[in-house]
Image (cartoon, rainbow, N blue to C red; front, side, top):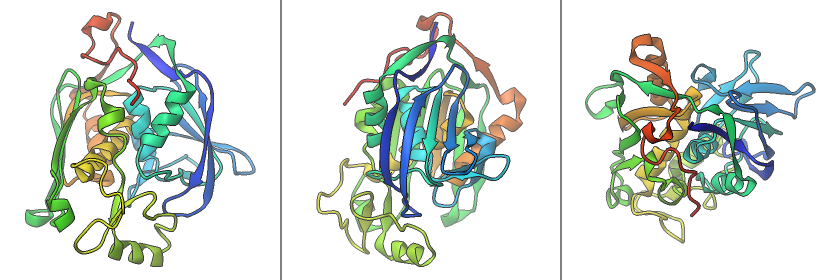
Length: 308
């Protein structure tokens, strides 16, 4: 049986929120089978659980934000969700002491390290997948403003993403990346890709009370011509790979790993969530499957994710 996974022990992290600039502590704890990923706001007088699912995503401006039925929010969850997806974690409690997940180094690599250091435990319950049975697509804009994202049937989980920023530093890199989650190379090939921003946009965001915790230590920052980070890029395709990292986290908000081929052009958090909602709105477009015989599962999905 291809089994669900959680942590063997708890692990902790401390950092600052990318947009809030507030200090925040995370405690990541094992959770029983079929729990899913659940944030718990322990900074409130009465702790509030905020389960992650496609419908609980209620704000996609610059990040993915989930909210409880009572309106309690957790912001900027996509990098941590991406790490959970990359390691195949199904069930996790995440205690958080503020509204925003810490940005750490701007990628998913610190979360991968934390989760792997706690150890991954197999559980006595079958791993459930959302299997896409027919293609679903969402589009926005026309011409130079066109964006789209698509899910199609596939026995595995692949992601293809193309960006189009028309900036000298971005133009000099590969702007299309295709990644296979069954390769076991998430930690090495995707997780270290950092979020990025333009210095002129950072100034505008800070004037609006955003990006207060951002800087060269947790983002790629560019002026009109070049990357300002002294150590340059971690990957030749770091910009496109970060969009893949984000998409993995956004799509994992559906609550289960997917069996699908995802392709996108200039998509972002909002369009990715629209894609999930479009899929869930069509009962004939997907089903939920398990694999009693691991040999029938997609290649690589039965193995625990490799370390660096």
